[in-house]
Amino acid sequence: MSFRGDDSGSEDGRSELRKPFLHTGSWYKMGMGSRQGSLMEKLGSSGSVIRDSSISVVVCTLIVALGPIQFGFTGGYSSPTQEDIIRDLDLKLSEFSIFGSLSNVGAMVGAIASGQMAEYIGRKGSLMIASIPNIIGWLAISFAKDSSFLYMGRLLEGFGVGVISYTVPVYIAEIAPQNMRGGLGAVNQLSITLGIMLAYLLGMFVSWRVLAVIGILPCTILIPGLFFIPESPRWLAKMGMMDDFEASLQVLRGFSTDITVELNEIKRAVTSSSHRRAAIRFQELRQRRYKLPLMIGIGLLMLQQLSGINGILFYAGSIFKAAGINSSNIVTCGLGAIQVIATGITTWLLDKAGRRIFLIISSSGMTASLVLVSVSFFFKGYVPENSELHSVLSVLALVGLLAYVISFSLGMGAIPWIIMSEILPVNIKGLAGGVATLTNWLTAWIITMTAALLMNWSTGGTFAVYAIVAALSLLFVILWVPETKGRTLEEIQWSFR
Image (cartoon, rainbow, N blue to C red; front, side, top):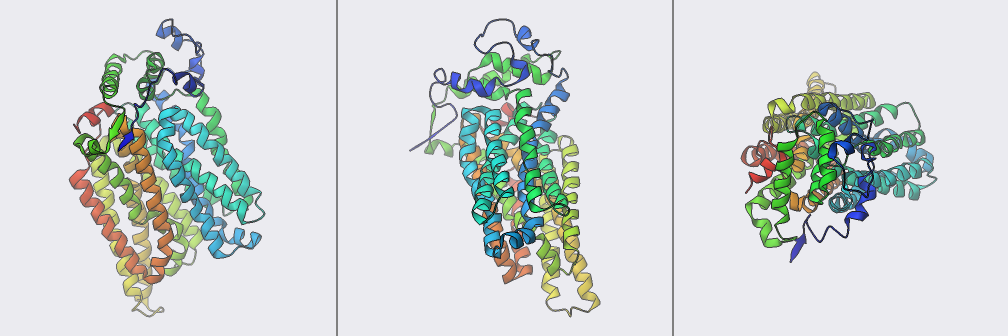
């Protein structure tokens, strides 16, 4: 039995098929068919290319970050629109619950396809394709007259989000310099939280149909934006397109930057990978260079969801009501704003402090805050509702929930995606990345579907279960997760051999 890796098959016969997705930047005006001429002549053909390295990479990151904004908007859409959609379309609560969960189902399908799509047609090509079902999905929801259009739209959105959730962090990791990779990688999660907050906020002022139309905007802007940024240089090198690889890297690092060292390091890694067999046997995945990064990447993305974040955010309004908080909509919007601020702090400090310390702080804070929420709900069941102690316990539950969201946003929200994109070996990245993303979405779906049942069983018990998972996450980080700050992707992957 064997798994197809990233180096499968001959590239000569397929390179022409990829070109429509590769040469879509204004800096590629030198002509697609010719490999002749100096590199500087090719690079100089575009007047729109930004010369400064950091500005160029930041602009590329901000353009692809429109995808995660779409991701977050999709996740946040169902919360403020629930009552209006149920009333206008005469739905049952169970039908709306299906609508809410179908984005996870679509994302699982997208996750299965994402790794191979990103390897075959490139990172930019995958994002272009993912944008189309997102746009069609929002239009279907906006014009829905019954549940069938709602379901179709939600599934299409989910598929696009599944592809985006894998492709964006990989693209950012592959274009970013090693000293900026952590902060730029965290922009992915920051954009997701911005999308969630926008959905919560705008949902308070516009109808659900108008909100669906607004949901079209991120991907509508993303598609033309992709024409003005380069493809991932590491992907181009892996596909044997060396002239395009050098041009892309030079654009990203700036014309005045000497890229010789980085160029040679990437070439050496690609050459080493190309000497391996295209088919990765199942037994070979047990080797340390594959097994350990696979375990870390999949483990972090699974633990991220098992700590209950999707269930808590999806049912935030009802949880706040159970805690005795009446203004649940306003508090939910505040929760979204807190996510953005905490994730922004991570984005700012991640390349200074490192990944491990943020993961340790995050999982420790999550454990402590979930224990506080669990204890508060346990004691509330034994205290009269009109007593002062009951009010104190309600406040403690609210504080614990806010502390949990802050702790999650400081590390476990953004960093698992960054780690996954950094540590997976190049020759199994498409396969392993797709599996890791699928695992994340499958776990998210399970948590979302079981959260309400668990809350009905015991609210305190539910948070106790999540607290145990958060404690296991802390142990996992301490024992297994390496520090990747300040190291090139090639250095990280060589360290597992």
